[in-house]
Length: 429
Image (cartoon, rainbow, N blue to C red; front, side, top):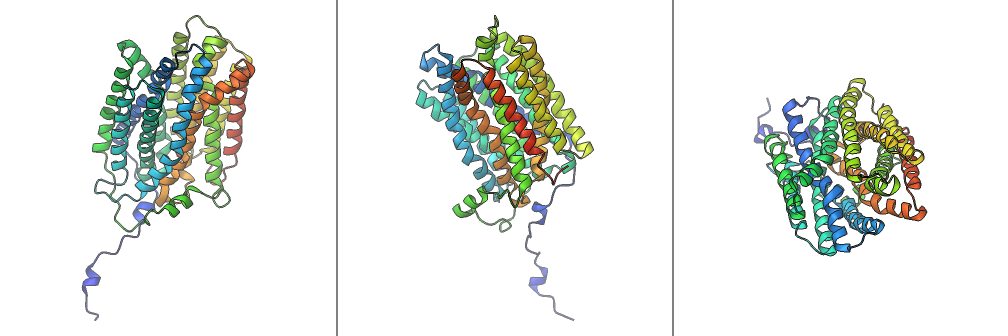
């Protein structure tokens, strides 16, 4: 009989199977509630500045009534922040994939992203120069990327495939509520610019703490994932569409649909003011936003769960893209308040379905489960960058022809191109 040695008693070295395996255990209501609460904090802190606080800061500094110039100024700051997102998302994902902290892989990045985002917002409220506004918004947007890259990776880490459509719906439903909640809070309370930013920062921290502190995050043992080098990072940024075509088509579809959506929504207030010339553009915007919000919530939760039940993703994303294209084309050819209300409903239905089901689709086309944080970071670029560049590009389209028809035509055609791209996915039903 062979003598038992100390080597036989040592545990086998980690092989990474636990971390590369797709989760099979369903997450409970407590996990989903804390996850949704965290995203509500994220969206209210991100969207209130984009929709209200930041444009007002820029307009106050520029001191002009020319709305095109104001939008271009806002678009310049937004575009620079989008350029930083190109790096922040995949870099954060790649680093969190390798984090061996005793607190887990994603949790340190969620904590750091939350703290940095909140601090940047508070400091942003004190700025009076365009340079200061721009620098602080770039910092806020970068920490937003750090936070959301880690949060979205938690879906692939902990949620089984047959639950991802429903869970992803709890990203988009809070987004719809956050669009209007921040506006109502700031205007109802009569807050100053600094007060508005400070309130958003406080809500971000308060709403994010339960998920950060109470939801477990598996600890990655050292040696499972290769260390990050500049070479591996740069090589990892390129995922060959020839070797991984489903990833490429899904990414392209995301970029196109989100760009189409951003074209259709980013200048909506100016469309009401200067296109439709409604008596009270702000009240009309809130009305359209409420319609949009209701349909986003219903679509994201109901259709996300239906997608899980049927085991189908591609058809839902295709249909969602077509609905968004239809909404934009209605605004292009029937420029009335009634048509805009119908368009808001269709856009909410399409975008709500797209956000939930497309997020689930993205998690199913990843090339390597051990690098899913980095790969989802690349996918997340398609959510942020189009939103960053759309206001400036949209303003250029409107100023080029002196109206909004071309803007909505481009929005509709871009969304249709996104529908075509997702139809090319073959590995997921």
